[in-house]
Image 1 (cartoon, rainbow, N blue to C red):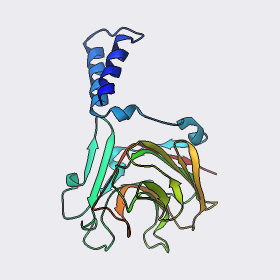
Image 2: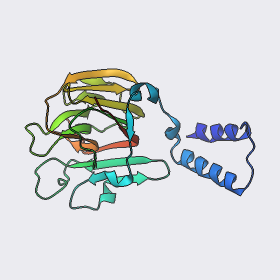
Image 3: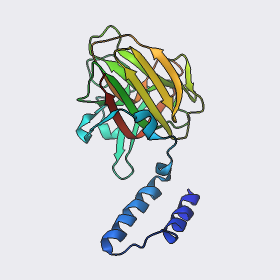
Image 4: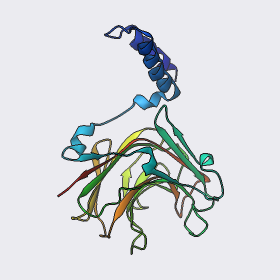
Length: 245
């Protein structure tokens, strides 16, 4: 944290252009405020252009980020969206209720990206994730199938004791705790394949069961073993791309 203040000071003293006028000073103040609140916001690894080449960015207004959280407590007690930093923080406790009083599924606080279910083409999820140490036994991102499908999900990424895994099996990325990582998940519907990239590097390629339609979810969803009492993940810069055949 101490290095952030000195970095900001040296940047402002050596800026290549002069700031003039109250509006410019106000803009600078807002940028400084966001960086001080969350200095890790400046950390971004990998290039966004390579994996997004040939794709079209999907517009995601805030209304598309539908939060599912335990039904018996206010959403703000399990989810926070900081409009300054753009960071969404999700947490839930192992003993929490499901997201509604009908389902018997495990506790979760997740965003379901609403209005962008898909059944053809190639779709890509991109986001910067952060999992604090101690979080275990949780799904942090999934490709969900339509309600009533033979399989609820096409793909899930779980965290167990600091390792990101494909469900509870193959390791996707070790040492996932306490750092921002860039996650790209590419689903080719026609080919029934999913590819996962972490910080721009290919980490997983799997065949998936076809289904009628799919959608993306991210956040925290408690699983069935090695579960910590409290689970948390943070996300920012979530983007969806698509590419028709």
